[in-house]
Length: 211
Image (cartoon, rainbow, N blue to C red; front, side, top):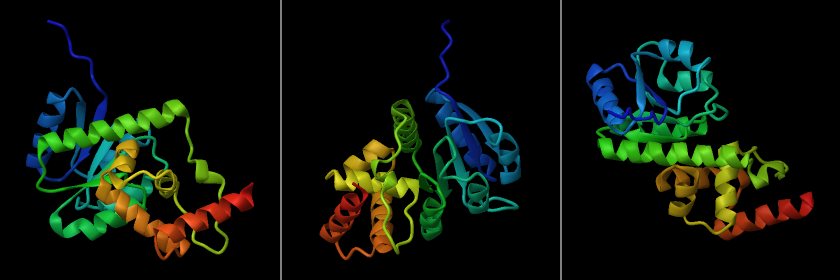
């Protein structure tokens, strides 16, 4: 019998044993190795010294919340995609988590096939960017007097300026179109853009100053 090659490790953090068991079964069937944690402290002790292919982190866990753990991991700079798992009432919290560096969020109840698809896209996008050693083209742009954009916001802005739709940008960056919309709204707010055309004008002005 030929042994299946692992597609990488997924760290799952959830205090509900049934959720851990379900995710473990679905992800193992898709070829991933799965390591489960019941709380954030257990995850931190491992994730600081060992990088998985991705992390699935529940918002509500014992002790420090998923958001606290995300901040301690420096989600924006963590070398693997981090997904927040949230109940329907936690969506505003999950969107806040994206601002703290989570790549995306997955709502409960979820379908196994959806989670596998989302993880495959995100891990693939991360691998492509690492292979290209790509930092956002707009990383050197400065917007005087405005709140600085995060690295991921600059990636989304780069997609937007290139004319990509929310769906196309999401596919490239491995995140959902809905999350692209959240990033875009945040970018417009930070840069004081009234609409899409105004945002492009602000970006082009900054690019001219930089050249």
